Amino acid sequence: MVVCFLIHTVCPVSALSAGESRILYARVFGSETGDGCDFTPEQRRLMQKEKLHVVARQVRSAVALSREASGAVCVEAVLGEEAAALGEADSGVFSLGSAELFPDQSVVLWLGVQSLAFTLVCSPHENLLLAEGTLRNIARHCLEELRLLGPGAEVLLKSDRVDALLHRLLPHGQLLFLNHRFAFALDKEIASYVSK
Figure 1 (cartoon, rainbow, N blue to C red):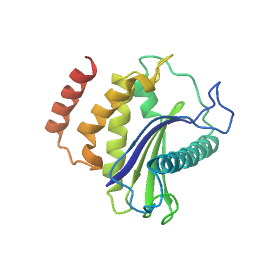
Figure 2: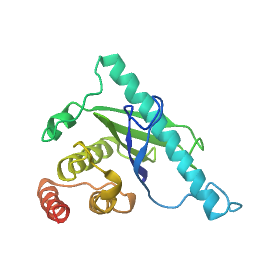
Figure 3: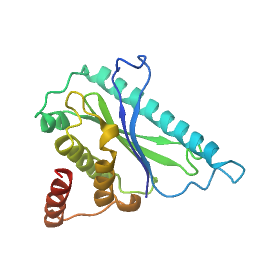
């Protein structure tokens, strides 16, 4: 089961300080059971928001470390170069301890594409190869169909399209095994919806 999906910044943005990461899109699947019943809905929402920010900061640090180790730098996006940017993307995985942020132990998969990071937080028993393939597929659709790397791309204004994309590729937080025919049909369906 996928616990949550995030799209956030990993390179400095003019409105943020050098060490910050802005969450552009977040989707939490399922219900959290480890927080107890003593909190109001507003307190739960704020605690969940802080948990997501902690994950985004850890991913930003992992991306920065990976890029520093490889000698890569954060470069500006060129419209139409989404496939090349995705091919050169940094990726990684790390584990969150039991009850560190989420009720159970979790595994975080991330994909750093230029100034953005796409992140999946999964249960530790999930198939990590399938999760990575799903994450790359979601990132590919976001970059190609929604033009998230383009100048002035507002992910916040495209959240309904990202929701529809996740509904088809990650329904209720479940990873899907897809054969090539079904994946091709799903790609056509997503492209027709996003182009509307």
